[in-house]
Length: 220
Image (cartoon, rainbow, N blue to C red; front, side, top):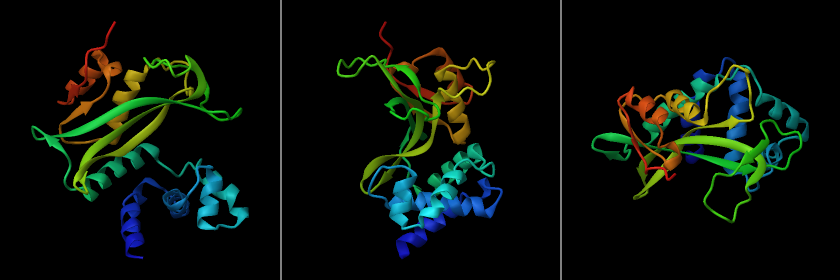
């Protein structure tokens, strides 16, 4: 029980991102299910893990689309919570260290939102050149815990396949800079990423906020 009390104290820090208490409680239910589930079957695995009544399946699914959730505010609050829960972050030259990357995950659902034909830009010859799936980018922060260093996720977004406006001309590099702005780490930091992010847009976006990029030079 003491572990769940610590869990609740952490999840309660995110309450301001929800305009309605009911929406927050559904969110807490979903996170609790993800915490203890033993299978990866989406909402069904949450229902099974918490032994919820089957009639609640649709309510839980609908809660994920609630307009009472302020997603960007939720990400910023989660960052603040992580910095509070992990008081010993990894620092280099006095700066925090953030890591970021993109991943393309194959999906087989025919009506799954955000799924599109993606080109695999990998040097590995074990991966197919094209897949149908989700293209996501993520940002994490490095913290010290259990005598080691862990990357604690701060925010993840699907950055291809979701088009809100035909006037949106942002690239994946622009969206990564935007994601770093959403998590809103106030102190200067190093951003560690692979060679894909060794680009002027990333360097300028970081330098404008007094941050630095650590990467390798992209091969041509």
